[in-house]
Image 1: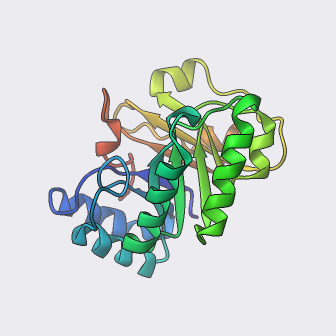
Image 2: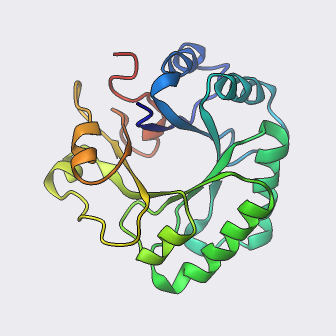
Length: 213
């Protein structure tokens, strides 16, 4: 079952064994977020292009990372990065990070969604990190309704989704050995999840727990 959406923010030349582990886990991967340089970078990176091609060949969606700064980034900057992910890495979709969750920002993200569709961007993931206004379910394929630590996830889980039908995802970091949020995510209505041990400012430089189990 493809239940893992993995943001893995390490270079393939620096962590080749970890990328091989991701590829070996292809039957379980809904998608992998490709993030060469807090986005696509300023020029094509052959190592990322190669691993993206291998992921697609293994039946895994490649999702290009773009930071939206909660709606504050200019549309032209986002559009440029969307096009680079498509042209340089043949991305199957996009992962819009730091997505606003309020109703007041919805029109901005609706415009972004049109840009994604217009560029043939495929799957659109919005990483709100919290439950957004229900309107966002109308424009995205996946909504990330939780991003935070394992302790917070266990102590204060996200509330049940009450909006329109949507594929939900929970991203959990700082998890102890053996912890895996997949079962709990499913109980909370999330078909997709990722649980990693990483902590601090860069938790997504670690692989999900149980990836090769």
